[in-house]
Length: 258
Picture (cartoon, rainbow, N blue to C red):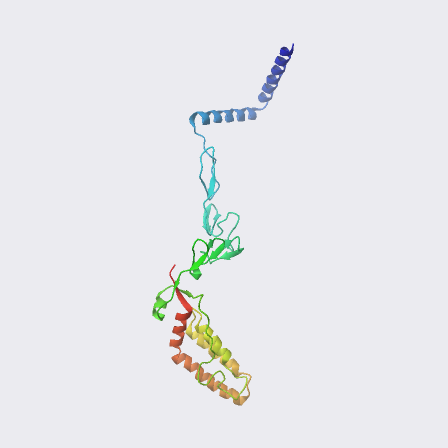
């Protein structure tokens, strides 16, 4: 009696399943395709991994399918290709120009910077990744001619040497007039000569403009004296300042050997 009951239940189950399958052609097709795929895969070992998303490469085989991210360093995936910036699929470029360091939360370089151990190495500053951080690959030029022939960049170790107006008449040649000191003009001129890549003519022009400003607030007599000294100082840097300018460029610049 118990066996008959079980047989009746089985008969009802298959009859019910057959009715549902007959009433759902899509389900029949799906079951058929899945079954055939499983049989083909098992018999021919033709199982394949699904395709990887853009900028990823398949690194495993079925059933151990895996995809690795192709973009490295300062790259991110844009329109299916790796481009400079990011290096992390969750990080994009900063203004589509420079690279981003997730730990520093800042941009690296100007288009070709490198994220190195969570630091930003900038090629424009002649830095390279030494594996643990950023290092400079610089050498000093022997003279101005050698400096002009190399890829010059600012020397990060150079301390500015500001000595004001290094002339026998000093910072205020118009003394005893007051308010006519050329110290600020001379200090800015020193800085300009010691700025790697600066233009000598532009430095001299700024020097002359600053001296003229120093003379402005003096009385008529002191203004005349001040303007006379301004002309002398300007003429000095224009006529004999080339050697000083070139020497300071050698001091403040270095050659990038990267």
